[in-house]
Length: 248
Ligand SMILES: Nc1nc2c(ncn2[C@@H]2O[C@H](COP(=O)(O)OP(=O)(O)OP(=O)(O)O)[C@@H](O)[C@H]2O)c(=O)[nH]1
Ligand SMILES: [Mg+2]
Image 1 (cartoon, rainbow, N blue to C red):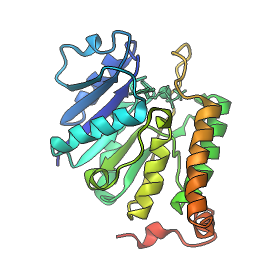
Image 2 (image 1 turned 180 degrees about the vertical axis):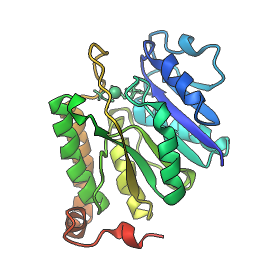
Image 3 (image 1 turned 90 degrees about the vertical axis):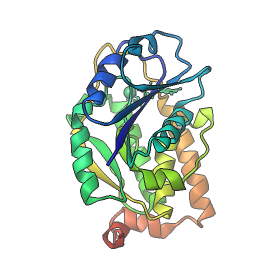
Image 4 (image 1 turned 45 degrees about the horizontal axis):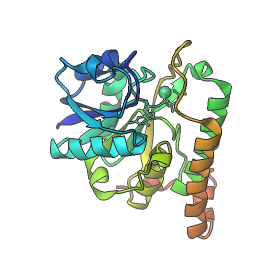
């Protein structure tokens, strides 16, 4: 089985080399999508055995992920792992995702930041929990850490889904793909990983109010189109049975 890591990068010169070097130890291919960085991110990787894709201008995280997925599929990867370039995900934890994939071959495996959660800023933690509630409702089952960028996708799912990847939906994509996947009978399971927040790191690209609002808006539209999908709400709260128990 061939595995690929996709790393979307926007100005991560300080951390990207360390992240990519660690990822190279874990998988067959490392695909870095440099999304119009104006720092030295690409130069940091010049001598490494990776697939470096470059967008000439910044198009957002969603487009970068989709470019990486398309490339991984041309390499015949059967599983694609995404992780962030800012050092918040430890590539050393990839084997745990691969182990879970063997038991859940049709699942998105979310590396859920459940260990040392107190490291996360309180506003981010609140925004994440808030997003989890809505994503779970729309997906129709409980989703843990729906905002984690560290996850594994089976290639069968990536072949069957196309989402809107416009720039302002950069941080909407990872919620939307979990919801859309459920309607294709691909569910998610979570594997607990460490929550890493470095003090003195660069400012977040995630805007807690704007990006959370964009996620809620995307979900609200989906719920309205499904007549509020109350069955999904009840399943997500455990009042009705979890559809994953019957999934093949
Ligand atoms: N390709 C691309 N990647 C981006 C863009 N914005 C952010 N990223 C990448 O997406 C990842 C996550 O961005 P962060 O700003 O760390 O967002 P976050 O991890 O949700 O937020 P924090 O928890 O505050 O770190 C990093 O690897 C960024 O380089 C973008 O416009 N294009
Ligand atoms: Mg980050």
